[in-house]
Every structure is written in structure tokens, then in C-alpha cells.
Image (cartoon, one colour):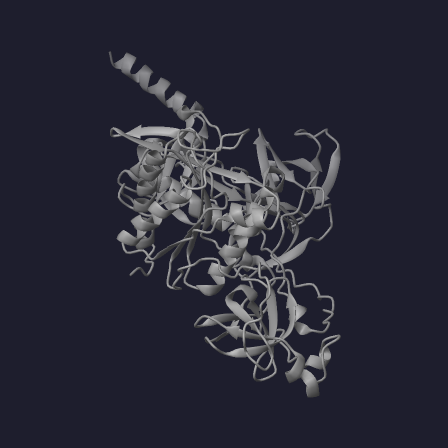
Length: 593
């Protein structure tokens, strides 16, 4: 008996020796074992959902607390996942090595007779790729790896990333008038073909520390870290990844594009210069300016003055109702006006009146630049709701069903937006529901239906210019001829139209819109499982590509069901969405009345 036990113990010990080393080491990552897993802000199912991850995704483990595991997300921020929906795995850690002798052969194969590729000394630091017996493979360059005898290597710290100074900028040509000077554009994602080897695409300053990956994939090997405030040169940008040079090799950092990444021209760097009328070609001389120049009169209180012709430009001041200013020139739908101190600024044409010089009476001219949009808007609203395709309707009620159209001038998607606005108002959220008939306006201007977003943009930008408090902008639609099995849902004996979030990617701020949509989708999924159809990203080759979402980081296009749903189902979905949005706003500590 004793001999049998002794034999078993020996066998167990032998098996433990043969067990792969990773089984004996502590887990480093989790791998998701369900289709969709919520990531929460703290351990507990009642805490805020900060994101979702898909099956097979792997995330580094930070710590554990009871049944919860804190993980590190791809953006560097922490989150919590429930232990039972993941499995713990061990992923080999990144190791750097250096030679412990002055001259060490690096060979093409893991044997002492293979070709010598390079001889290294004790000063070089190399990324360890893998081990095979007594040999270790190290990375010599982007294209070349080699093998060295492991006994001549020792582990060392990762090389310190070098801070690359900013390149000397080219002189900026400033032409008159200075009002034409616009802020730098955000970094535009580059196609792979543009990011040629050795071709500098730009520089960025890191606002926090970032891990450097061997490939543009968060599951790839981490080859180092860049500290905060490092200025780096990048060689291309695609799908949220910058390609950089890191210690002589290609590296990638995950950093979604945003406005703050651009090297922006701040007002203090290039002041808005004083412009006399004589600076403008064709302008009258100062002695006749008062008699000949056009004038504008301000309509609303605290009207914004901006540094450029768009709501994305910085606010440089405010003016009050009844004040009158001379017009220097106009750019599109924006006026350049001269202020009392002879400086100039931009103001939106649709929130002012053009008046007769000397009489201060409104000029009787046609105006299609945005005036008379948003009737009833007060200026304290937090949410703005509009309907670019305002006559979209449903098959069971639509009076126009010719061809692919399912439209109605009265029973249409605007009723859903109106109901959503009423529900928000009832819960203390100030909301504005735009009731402009964009289809009618296009017809009056003899413009194509394809210009719907250009028409609705006038209303949205007018609202943003009038009300700096706007935080969320929703364009309400219904989807096309989708089967009810795809767009209808019954929950607790109540029928809903399923929602779809549409994100336009043809503008630099789309990732903020996407993040907002993902948060709302996760909340809908938690409160009304299956109600959300998720997110769909659309670029220029798939439609409009922007959908007016460049105006605000909180701007979304929402599809409420399709042509085969009913108005009642859309009303039910509006109620569910209102509940989720209100909770989100309160939890985000938004100021609500």
C-alpha cells in the first residue's frame, strides 16, 4: 500500500514538472466567454455601464474584488466585469533582453552552425520574440529577427522612449482679411497607402501615457510605453491607431481621433486682427462707410460672436438684442461684422436682421439661410429633436406609397419626435422639438430630396448658435422596408419598434458620437433587452457620411423601427428611450430643471 501511494506521488510530481509553465503562473488577462459583456464603472450590477465587449476579447487584469475583476480597457481606463462570464488566461509578458558579453553572434536559425546575421554588444536592448530550447529569438529591426544562445542574454528594462521635438513649422501666410484665418483642422484619418515608410504624417502630444503595441491590435504584444506629454512623430493613422517609430522598430498606439488631438491655433496665438473697411477689396472708404455699408440688427440675447464662419469656431464674445453693427463682408451663411473697437467677428446670418443703412429698418429680401427655423425655441433647452426626413411614415397609415416611398404630410415621424420631447419635458428635461417641414422647403426651392441634410443643417446649426446649452441633438427617422421580425419586439406584452443608432464617420468627432451611442445602447439592452439593434457606422461611400453630427459630440441619428412598424410601437420606444436618456443625464450630473 505504501509503495502504491509513493508511486502515485512520484507520478503526480512528474506530471507537474511536465505541465506548461503558464498553468503555474498567475493569470494576466481575461477572455470573454459570452456574446456581449457589460463593463461597469464599479463592481456590482447596479453600477453604470461604461461599455460592452464581444466574445473572445482579451483584457489585462488589474485587480479582483469578490466576484468581480477589474480590467484595463483599450483606451487605458479601468472597468469591472463579472467573473463568471470570463475565463482567466496567462499571456506571456513582454521581455527585453541584452547581451552579457561584448560580442554575441545573432544567427538566422536556432543552432550554432546557422548563418550569422549580426554581432551585438552589451549596449543594445532587444525585444524577445520567443524561446526554443536553449535559443532565444530577438527582434533586430522591423524586417529581421535572429537567434542567440539564451545563456548569453539577461533580462533588462524596456528602453526609454525618446521625446521627439516638434518640427519647425513652415511660415503661415496671413492674407487680408484676417477673418479668413481658420483654426487648424483636426487630424484626418490617413489611408494605408499614404503612410509610406519614412513619410512623416504629423506630430501629436500625448495627454496621458500610452502602451505601444507591435501590431494595430490590442491583443498583440506590448513592446513599451510612452509617458505623458511626449511629442511623437507618426507615420499614418487608421482605425484609431497611430503608426510610430519606437526604438528603431514599427509600433502602434491606440488613440481615437478627436478635436483635442489637432495642433490647434488658439485665439491667443493668432489674435483676431483689427480690420478697416479699406482692407477689404472693393469696400468704401472710411468717409463714406456709414452711408453705404450694410448693417445687421441682433435678435436674441447673448448672441455668440465667433472667430470663424461656423458653430465649430471659438466664441469670442456676446452681443445683445437691438444692437446694430456694420457688415464688412459675408462668407456663406455668416456675416463678418465690425465691432466698436474696430475688431471683426463672425455672426450667423439666420439669427440677425439685415437692416437699411440710416433707417435701421429690415431689408425686404428673400432669405433662405436659416431664418425662421426653430419657431418657439427659448434658448435654455438641453435636448434638440428634429427630423431630416420629416414625412417618413408607416405602411398602415401612409397616403403616399408610390414606388419606394412610404410618406405622409401629417401622420409621420415628427409625431414620434414630438412625443419624445413631451416625455422629456415631463421628467424635467428642457427639450426643443423642431417642426420645420424640410421636404416642403426643398420643394419650394426646387431642390433635390438628396439635399435634405443640407437643409436640416440650417436648422440644427441655427439652434446651436442660438443656444450654447444644447448638449444632445437627435435626428429621428424610421428605417426602410425591413421585415417585422427584424424591427419589432414584444416585451412584457407590449410591442415596440426596435431602435438603430446611425453614426456618420466622415468627420473628425465621430468617435465621441459613437461613444455616446454605445452608452445608450448598453443601457437600453440592460433595461429593455433586444430593443436596440445596435450601432451602424456609415462613411461617405455609404450615404451622407456626416448626418449633421459634426455639430455636437452628443448628436445622433436614431432609427425608430421601419415602414412595417406602427406609430403606437414607435411611441412605446420613445417612452423607453426617454427613460434611459433621463437616467443617463442625471447620472452624468447634467443640470436639469
